[in-house]
Length: 421
Image: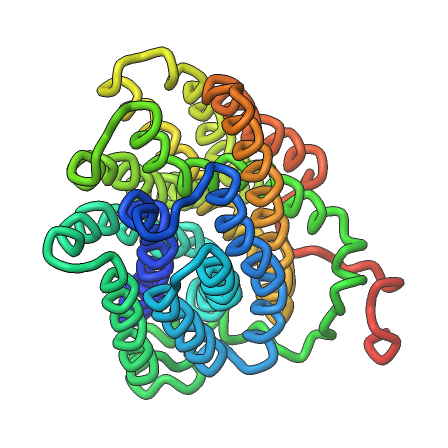
């Protein structure tokens, strides 16, 4: 059906974003021969990405709300593909910093746009499954990165990694322009699918738009932002530091990373699909929407503390634990990303998703800087994994406290623009 093909289209974009952001962490050993980097400098590169990613995640949501999904996503993908291309010309740490900053600025709009696609194309009983399919793109891109980069490094200089991944993004942009329209304007929408989407299409875009300062006065928005800050602190550590951990602590070379580092990311993809599908299944079994979301979130969060054991077991078990953590994280992430569409009016979903993503990226910056400091000052990975293993549990408690009911919010009149009262 058309709406599921659109979910796959958006999932492909998310896959490209994760391929692009994994290029530097996986190729860091090869890059380091030309541009030597300390652990702290490596964390600065990730922070440069996440800093601009955070602000553009928030701004990207507003951009997509203003331009519409089709035009907004086109601009976002063009920008981040060109930013990825620029990495190939870096000759110094400073130039890499600039390229990472620009890449984060472009990729920051991806998930807000994806959240808006879900709000436009999927009724509530399908939205978590759709977000699971889209979020599975994170795993596809991350799974592809280690072996693809290893192959490129066998035959070419590391700079070609960035040139080729940028070209993939530009090709996706052409696909998007040809294939995507809103349900109201799509030329190939069948009668049967129009009936299915009637409940979505009847939700008007004329509700009053809330500016960021007023959105930040909504308790549920803060709950999502704080929970995302905590969980993404752990996720970005796993995402950016796993290859380096394998290089530094386990003695892997680029071929070993290419052969094995994709396994946890494959588990992450399964987690995306299982988390979203499990929540949708519970809704279809007549659980309340809130119960369905929170049960699935809790089931995801309880898997995360096992990461504490990684430094103390042999590598086969360490990869298995990483896989379990990646599965739980992406199951969790799928559900957190669909909550803005569950709670907020459709015309501010992009803005809310942007603020939530901003919180997540800031969590990645704060924890990433702490990781770089701890490792360069002799503390080792044990304390890092101990901290990371607690974040999702705390995030779950935050959601339970700040979002007692999952469902369309009644925005207090004091927060509405004067013309809407």
